[in-house]
Image (tube, rainbow, N blue to C red; front, side, top):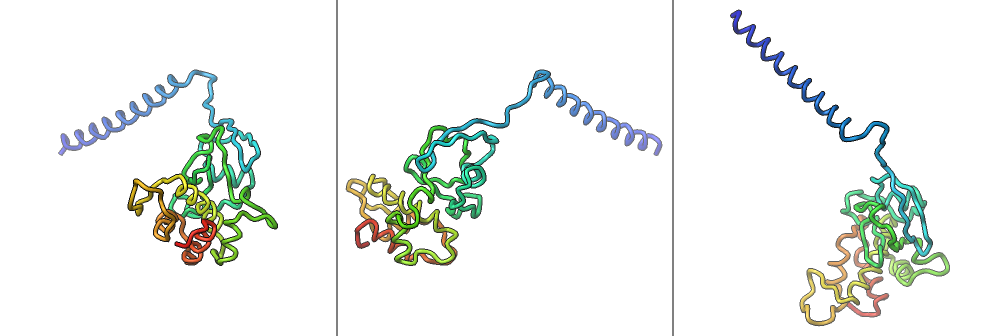
Length: 211
């Protein structure tokens, strides 16, 4: 019994001393990696063009493009929905291509041209896609609408550039604007109100083609 107790105490001491040694080594290693008096830079200056205007920001390196637009530039038309790139409410266009702004860091867009819903049109001078959404009731609550419209504009540009989708049949000819193409390309933009058929009608009208 005595030897068993002694063994248990010795084992406990060994574990405690090992943990302490690891902790000390980690602290020492961290101190060696960072010279005395030095500090890590957690912010970065970034410059990009937003809706035609040059913007300069000093941002925490972890700031998403979505938060830079909403919290720093107060362009709140771009919505934060799922914040996981699954709903499309935060869609903006970067150099003409649509991106989920919640999934990309602002510091990655140095020198880029960014367009948000605010840059497409304004009351009295709507973008054709905005006007078509109004005409065809392409929204209900409106929360997803900015992302839907930005994505719709980019979708037509993708088709004109002959970029195929998963439903494109013939890759050797110009991609046609069809309902199947539009629905596939817009599938990343969710509308919880269910205005999908009206959204398709709006896109078709702007494209000038009967799908």
